Length: 244
Image (cartoon, rainbow, N blue to C red):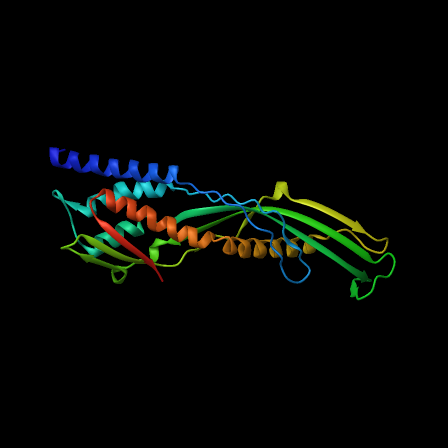
């Protein structure tokens, strides 16, 4: 390896280290306010939320992989296609994670499997379900193309338009930590599997609503932009990131 190539590798390693260090130092934490859902659900109860940043292994690997296409000789190639390929190598950049506890309450009266609108003795059931879950939001960088990037060769400014953040997957319920409390009248049975699945689905929707309410998607966008900005800044370029 030539001295010039060795210098480039050192610059890449330095950029990685500084970006990772900045992320580790600036990990925010936040608490969730009380949430009041609609219908029969009482809502999110004392949701303790910790927003944390994660750098996936793909990020560090992609920086090394993309270095060959980004660099030629001793200068950064202002080539949109090369930058697009490098950004896409990051795939889904998971940038924000929240741990949310949802509390669902249900109280109704049923007779012979049919809900009734009055409290007939023995037909009432009260249910309290505590559902902890993890939800991850990220920016899908595979959607980036050459139309999303503009490079000003004179000023060294890169303008990049990224897709809006979204949930990487459905909230991951921590099954072993679910707590259920119920009180059934003599004419009512315990919660069935079908009812349990319906309640779990309701909990997932509430958790996503709460995640949006506390700004998880906005935080994911902010952190994705910060990661790219820090990386390109360490290579001597300024980047202006926007979302659409």
